[in-house]
Image (tube, rainbow, N blue to C red; front, side):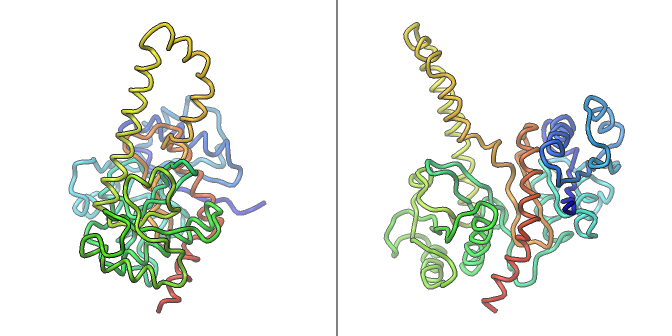
Length: 336
């Protein structure tokens, strides 16, 4: 039997914890035989939730943590002072080799800080970006960076492209994935100072498949497999993506329920529509991995439901089995 992939889950993180984190963890170990989950958090609350389920107790373990880092807390101070918090204890499990990966729907700031200072960056990695998969007409694209490095430099964006290439090749199975940089036009001379400086570096990088600039309106069409940008731009794109998707759902529902004719039509297309819209659900993609660290750190939405938590945990199995961190380290060492 293959060695189990061990995932430490911040059971107290997110708007709906610990209900969704516990259910997501239970469902994950039922779906994957190659997984062990540590639920890190307040013992009494987690035990109360676990009592609702039947599960393999050999593959789901509780780790008590008496403190919780709240969303509004200053992340650096919280990481320093709340040593018995679910985030810090779960991160140290990865640092000490007791877990292969960490998953949280909790404080993004604390997760980013903890990833850098507790888990630590791989040798040669200047910045560790957040890289979520986003749905497109052609499947999905990797948006890198979406929130970790708002002051990134051109060399950081080149590293993002290389790390994203490793991820898409080995986790998503896309051979020679295409790379594009977010810009305000297709022409090479367009863009702000960062884009103008980065473009020729990407163009002349031999180990990525760079295809030029991508405008935001072309991202949903699946223009490129990897969308490179600094974190401010990436976060705006991600939030706009989510907002438009939610608004479109409301508009479609309103239109289908507007009169008797459309209601009859809605009944006829309901199953097909659900199937099509499911491909655009963010739940199915899990969380955003923080690439370039010594261990896997995955940040999922604060409002995540149990399906998103489950898929965030399951993606850790593929990431770990494919040795993504080792492959990123090897790819970046080639530039030294």
